Amino acid sequence: MHRVRHSFFLFGLLSIMWFIFRTGTKPTRICYPCQQASASSGSLWLMSYVLPFLLIKHPLSFERLKSKNMILAGLLIALISSLLILTNVYNMVGNYQVVSAAQETAVKLFNFDKQAQISGASDIIVVNGTNAKNNSTEGTNISAVYARNAIMRSIQPDTPLSVVGLSCMEKAPSDEEVYKLVDNAITQVLGTRGLSEIIKRGDRVVINVNLVQPSCGQPGEQGRGIITDPRIVRYVSEKVRKIIGTEGTADLKVVDATFYTDKNPSLKNNTHSFYYGRLERKGNDSVYYDHDADGILDGGSGAQLVNLDSVGMSERFCTVVDEPIRGKTEVWLPKFLRTKEQANGDGEYCDVYIGMPILKSHEICGVTGALKLHYGSVLGVPERAEHAGYAKTGDLNLFLDYLCAMNRARGFDLVIMDALTGNRKGPDNRTGNIGDMSTDYILANAVLCSKDSVAIDTVETLFAGYRLESIPLLESAFRDGIGINKPEYIDLKGFDAFYEHKRWLHEDNPGSGAGSYPFEDGRGNAKTHNDFRSPSNVSVTCLGKKSDSDYVFKYTASDSSPNDLGLARIDLLVNGEVKKRFFDNLSGDSAPVNLKNYTHQKVRYRIAAWDQALNCALSEEREIEIR
Image (cartoon, rainbow, N blue to C red; front, side, top):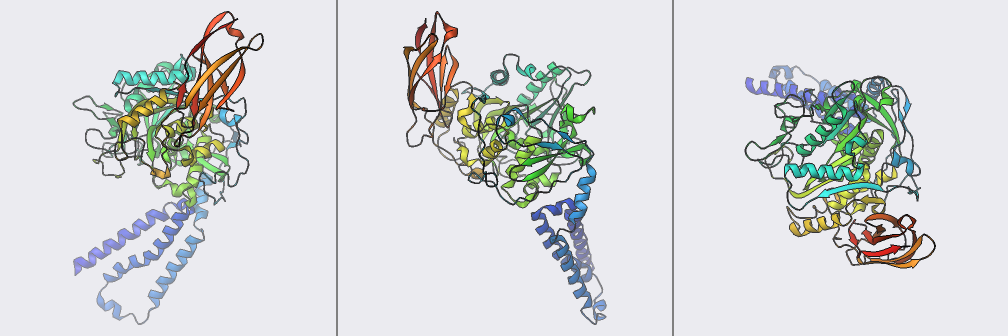
């Protein structure tokens, strides 16, 4: 009996400690509606936890209880505690914690290029301890993205297309071929100077990778299709190091959250750490992030690995973003992600921010790409693990709008997407911590690159075989001015290479189960399409000279089969380069084109017809002499 009473005592003690840990030690969590409900019910159960203490009392003690006053008093305390929590009284303490933590100078940020090009873009402010209160209760889905913002975002006629580079091959690439894929994709976006186009000597560069669940997957391929391939990370990091050097202000960090708060990013006793990030191969041929667990990325870059979950409130700065649905929204990011102007002389800042997501589906967002990758920067392990009560709202849909706010607080300057694999049922292997279960992925053998996070996620969505309208995050991001999600305004390099590659994936991975293409239908509410046909009846003819320098071209195209998503754009190519783009009358029309620069030359011309799935068909190439 004594042992039983002792066990009850331990159970009661541990239960109370757990309740305090979940609520009392972090009052800011009471502002989450889901946590309010949890804490409220927990406070009621707290009284039941006292019962084991009573049970260890000697039975004679109960005989001395002549009334039920003690029981009634206990129940009254539980009821009062519940009322205090439900009315958010405890949140006063939480707000004080947040307000007193920030000590930054108010600075107005410059809007990103794409944001400036889209009408209605709003301000972003770095604040001194301002606690923006969100009063919005509306959710976001594809039919209600503009629920509180009736004015649709429009693209200006002279807006440049967002460039997305694509480099791919049919067979699984060797290490050297992976490096070539990366180089080709970067060159398509930045030109022949590559990364030197945006990075210079002495710059401070941060590379954000995807390291969620690195130990998941079958033995021998753990992390495959789940984390960013370390070959890409190490290769790009080494290229960056060659540019920035090692002297003066030069600095290079590779970061992501590891779901623990220790400053050591490579703990050997935690399977979420960088130490477990690897591409497993037979023998001694595996490629690691940090094989020796010294906190430095393997290879020759010397990049510092950073656990974002170890960056506390005092090491962060607050940005308030006026998000159309959520209203004024606080975003707390590590100080090393500030721009140089925001740092105002402080040594912690970032000149160039590079995102390295991986092609995979997601159980909440549909796909997880460049936009979702920012969520690793959220303050607090429990908040991010539970998707922050959906960003302090209790509303799953508003989580997407919080992602938009994070992207506007500090967006990527460049995104290099690992599409060597495609995870059909991401973001991991769907088994949580059961690390030896297989991951449902296919070999996609590609690398994507862009300066526009929305555009590259749009291409990723179509790459996965999903309908764009089933991924509301894309429309929300476009609405917020982050980037472009309209296929007609995306310049996907390679013309018909994307269509041919998807067609090959479709044929090489048949069926609808594990290991098939497209990805799993309904994952995160993402819906697959069946448009794997390029436009048909694609032709162009030169009707002759209209004026001294104008020649008239007549074109036709169609995309009207039952599964087709419709035409998006027609490009007129002269000597292999786009000379003019058409956005209207896509099924057929004629238009003059100025060819003065080709006078006294023979030129080759054709059209590229794009559909809404970014399938492309090229017409027969013709030749004409310009007089």
